[in-house]
Image (cartoon, rainbow, N blue to C red; front, side, top):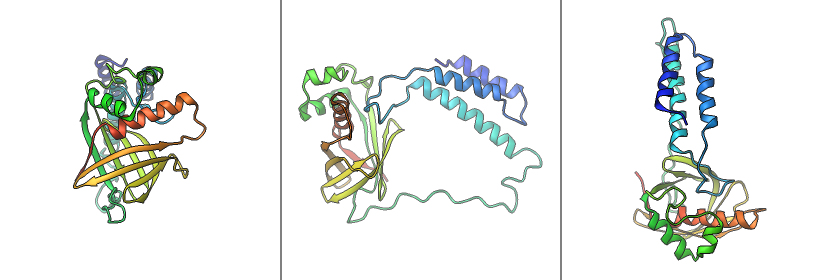
Length: 241
């Protein structure tokens, strides 16, 4: 695990080595620490989503900070023309299109923090038995390490669906609005998951009704179904500005 003391030491080594170039050995050391950090069992089915645990996120943050500082020192050093007079900076990427009458899903939706009790209730409502949950490794007491709650966010564009857990992007796929109450999604052009949805005001409820994951084994399909239920059916999503 990357400790705060180790991160402080790596940052200190970087500044002692000078400001004209980024020390390769510092980055290598940081990346080695990150690579050696173990991850908890993903809540999402293994082939689709492996969220980072906190030590790994801190390690990544340290590397990003080192790179950012090195890049800033390079850009703003004396004689650098980057960002100087007469230079132009490209505009940022285009914002997400506004929802339309034909596709009201477009936009960003979030559940806010959900509790372990809510997640277990969603699984019970969907009809999963205790034996099924146990066979997939779901522990009702810890909710796959999320007993203190986990926030889910969905971002719909015209054709893409991005899922976030606690601010970390976990899955990007394509989707298609079938009608005013159904949409389908998948990893590629194969849209193998069917959802029913309802929008009332700024509230979105989703029910996963079919998931025919291609070439999935029985155990993998069960994990997929459990993950889908926890993510989409635990709580109502609220449209974000």
